[in-house]
Length: 495
Image 1: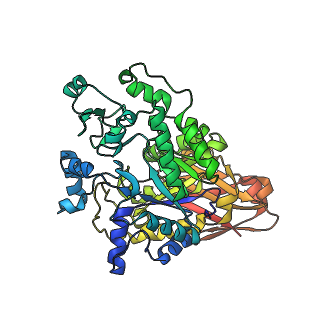
Image 2: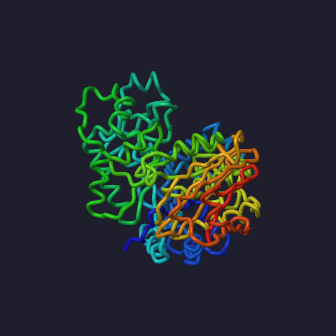
Image 3: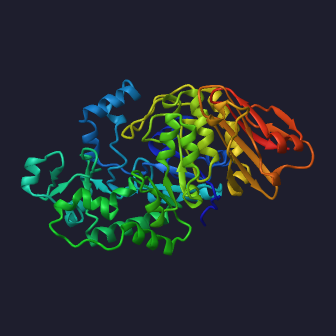
C-alpha cells in the first residue's frame, strides 16, 4: 500500500551512501537498505516529512569511478569537501547509472522493498532517481543495444573526442550532454528518437515503480522533443521524429498501473509548465530559488501571483545536492528567511539532509564519505519551530491567500520588503510575514474581513513565542501594524 501524501508535501533528500555510513557509525553495526532502524523513519514522520528521496541508490559504474578519479576539477572539489580523502571514498557519479538495481554496497532489491515497506508503515513515501538523458558509459546496453544511443562516426570521434567514445564492441557513441555545457564523460547519450530506447526506458520506469512511491527525474527537460532535436538533430541522419513526447507516454503507462505514483521533474529554462502539462506532478521552482538569492521581495511577490495549479505543482527549495549549502550561499540570517518562504507557500517543500543543522560544506555526489560539521544550534532550533508550524493541517490542506502589504505611514516605502500570506479554512487561519531585506521594515496588513473575529484576537508568534492582542475594530480600520528587523519573520497562530 502506498503512503498517503498531503496536498503540500514535505520531502527530504538524503545521499544514500553517506546516510548508510552515518547509520553504521551511529549503531555500530553493518546496516543496509533493509535494516535501517524504524526509529529513523518515525523521527522523520514526527518532523512532518511525507516523502524521503534516497538519492543515488542505483548501482555505481566502474567506468564512472575511473572518470571521477581523473577529473582535475572534481579532485579539487573532493579536497575542499573532505581533506585527506582517499580512492575508497570515491564511488563515481550516481547519475552515471550502471543498472537500475541497488548498488551492492547498499543491499539488494529485496532490501529496497523492505526499506519502502518500513517507510510506508511510518506514513512516508519513498522517492528514487530516474536519469532519463543518459546511462553509464559502461552500461550493458552499450554492448547489447547500441542502437539505443546516439551513434557517431570515426570522424566524429577523431574531431571531438570529448563528445564521443568507442565501446569494447567498436561502436562509437556520444556522451550524455546538456546543450549549454560540456559532455558528461562518464555517460552514454540515449537516443530519444529511437522507439526501442523509449520502450526499454519505460520498462525500467515500471520496475522502479514497483519499489517506490515516486521518482525524481533528473534534468527532465533534456528529453523533450524540441530540446533533443536542438541538441542531437545533426547526428540523427534524417531518422523519423516521434509525434508524442516521451514523458506523456511514459507517465501515462506508469500511472495506468500505479495511479498514485508521483513524478517530480528537475526542470529549468522556463519549461516547468510544459512538463506539468505532460503529466509531472511537481517541477523544480528554480526561479524562486534564484529570486530568493537576489533579495528581491517585489519580484518574489510577482512570482507568487502565478497560476494556482502551477504554484501547487512547484517544488520549493533553498538547497539540494546541485546547489551550495543554504547557510553558506545565503548566510545564516537570510537562509532562515528564505526557508520560511520556501516552506510556507503552496507546493512541495523540499529539504536537504544537513540543511536543518546548518551545514555549510557542499558534498560532491561522487564521494561516499562526508566531513563532520558541528551543528549550528540556532539554525537547528529555527528549523524545529518552522517544521512544527508547517505540520499544521491548515498548511497541508488549507486554502492559500497572498496578501498585499501597505505602507505603515505615508512616505515610508519599506513595506515593499514584506512578504505575507494566509493559510485558512472554515474561519481558522495562520499568518506568515517575512521581511525579506537587510533593513528594518514597517508596514500594515489588512486581513480579509471574513477572518476578523468579533472578540479580541491574539497573534502568537511560533518563532519567538511572543503574543500580541489586537481589537477587531483596529484591524479593520488601521490594519495589523508590522515592524521587523533584517530578515526577521512572524509565523502567527491566531488564538
